[in-house]
Length: 113
Image (cartoon, rainbow, N blue to C red; front, side):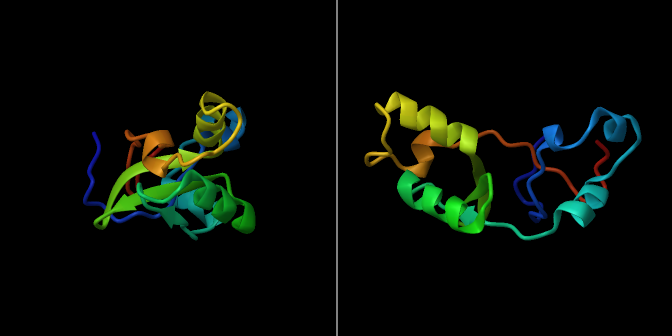
C-alpha cells in the first residue's frame, strides 16, 4: 500500500543488491546506510532534457518526482530511454510527467526487503 504522506528517505533499486544479501532480512535503513541519503528531485513540469542534465551532472540513475510536496512519481534512466525512443531518438519537448513512473511504492526506514 502506498502512503503519499511519508517522508522520503531514498529510492532503492533492489536489483542493486546480490541475491545473497536479499536472502537475509534487510531493512531500508540498512541499505541507505551503504547507499547514502542524498535525494535528488524534479517536478512533473520539468523537461526531460533538464532532468537528464541533472542526472548526468550528479551521476545518478533516478529522480523522485515531487508535486506540491508529495511524491507523484519516479524517473529513472529506463523511463528516459523509453521516452526518447518513442520520440524518435530525442527528448524534444517531452515533460517529466510524460515519461515518469506514476506508481512508485513508498516505504519507511523500518520496511524489510
